[in-house]
Image 1 (cartoon, rainbow, N blue to C red):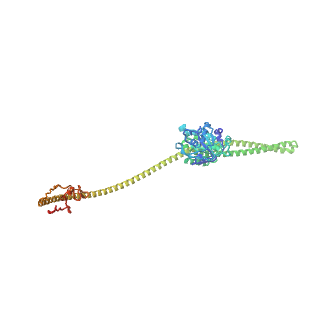
Image 2: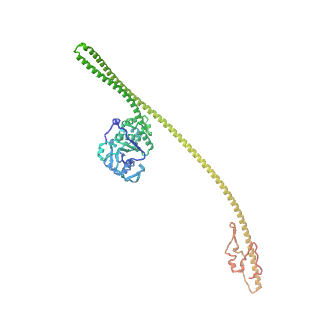
Image 3: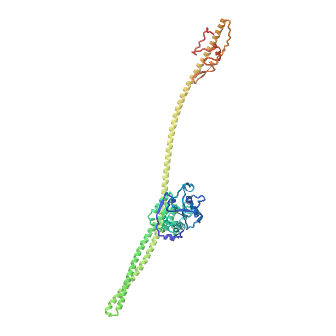
Length: 555
């Protein structure tokens, strides 16, 4: 919607730049009372039905009613935009592009906002020339015309007649239009949208999506003295010559385009002030000459009247009027000469005014040359400053690396010292353990010697026990023989086991420090001695000495 403008139309615009508000944290959807901009594809909806997940697709996902526009709207031509109203929002999302995901339902309680769909130029196919192509006046005119068509809500009668509402929004909510996948320059796009909105009589809210550096540069740009009070035409004159800027990389730096525009407007204002002063002076002189000529013309007319009157009166007595007629004639001639002189002066002043105008034009051209030189000097100074900042940054990086290295070395030295202390403690502990092991080895050796001695003592005791058993058995046999001989009629045959009983064998455990008797003997009684009371072992109270039984023992 909207007719086409060319460069002369934009240059002739005398409309002042309206309000520009920079919003850092909010998004376009948050400005419900504004005309919200859809960063559209030339085919509205873009990839909403095929996996797209950037600004337009996210907006259509929030408001699925907008998908109906894909059925009824053709692709947009360069001077066309699509205005939509009535898309209700149903959902929230989080993330962007590949991180986009559903973030819960949304209840839309307000009246549906106005949405304007405008498609930006796609610079992806221009490669390294993408930025220089954006600075072409032809490309700028295309973007300005597209934005002017999209922001025509207030001024276009076709829009106000189609949407029958009491009050249209007077503010456009937009952002980095075409600056994502299409590789548009954010600073240039912000200026173009501001110009289009001001031309359409609408304020502008610009969301920077949290980009602090760009937000600061845009705030600084709009607050500069040259921009406040500037017109759309002055801004077009400044940006239309950016393609001739000698150092394009300078423009690509943060704030580069903003600074170039401010400098061009400032220098143009200074040159215009000098030309205006010269023109005003020439105009004053010309006006004075014209007034003098008009006064001389009046005087000449009066004198001519006097001459005619004298001629009329000259028909009377010649003696009375001859002196007056001559006087009037001389005065008339003088007035005529004065008028001619004034006319010549006016011509001369006009010629001087032309010369002064030419001088003013020459001065303006000199100012433009000086501006170019100043721009070059400013670029050189900026390059030197950038180089100095780079060197300073490198020095700071080296200093940080040195400090980090120092910190690392200090930490390593501290760790080495701690490791040395730990090793010393380990050595001390090892020596202590070695000393304890040596003490335990000596104690074990003493215990072993004691055990050997106990074993020898036990073996001696066993030997004595065997001798005592042998003596006991001999005594018992002798006692039985004596009894047999004394009784004569009782003959008892007793089989004496001469071998050492099993229960007298002792198994000594040197480490336990005692002896354990093997076999089934309990209290010195075995199955053999249980059958024969005489064969029972005596109870020796002293294992060191065995006392044999008395020869007079009774059977």
